[in-house]
Image 1 (cartoon, rainbow, N blue to C red):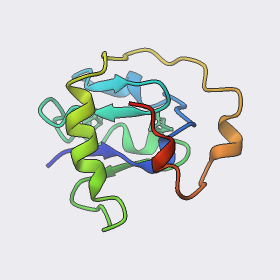
Image 2 (tube, rainbow, N blue to C red):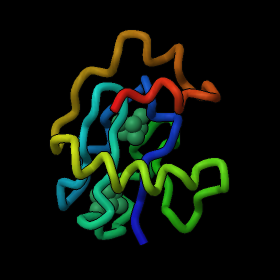
Image 3 (cartoon, protein in one colour):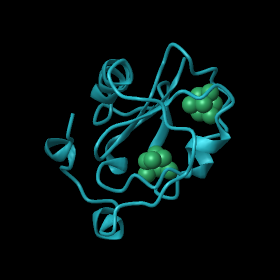
Image 4 (cartoon, protein in one colour):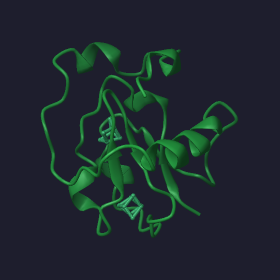
Amino acid sequence: MTYIITENCIKCKYTDCVEVCPVDCFHEGPNFLVINPDECIDCSLCEPECPINAIKSDEDVTDDDRHFIEINERLSKKWPILTEIKDAPEDAKEWENKKGKLNLLEE
Ligand code: SF4
Ligand code: F3S
């Protein structure tokens, strides 16, 4: 089991989640964060920190989000670790809860 970050984080990237992780397994890309499933210890501390509910247990993902399991695994091998909160993008509010953001993910 692991926690994963799903579509709603794309272009919002609030980063409230990163500082509570005891094993530093968040990785940052240009407009999205992912969790390294090999490091995540399933502590669940990060899940309530995200203001837009983008973090889910891989046991709770719906079919709509299932492809994010592979995306978190793959991009966590490529992107650097982030451990400190940083400013969200200026237009983050406008992107909250928008559907169809996957094609905007910058890898
Ligand atoms: Fe880190 Fe725990 Fe969240 Fe996994 S569930 S990413 S270990 S805070
Ligand atoms: Fe993304 Fe939510 Fe963390 S928007 S960066 S998963 S706090």
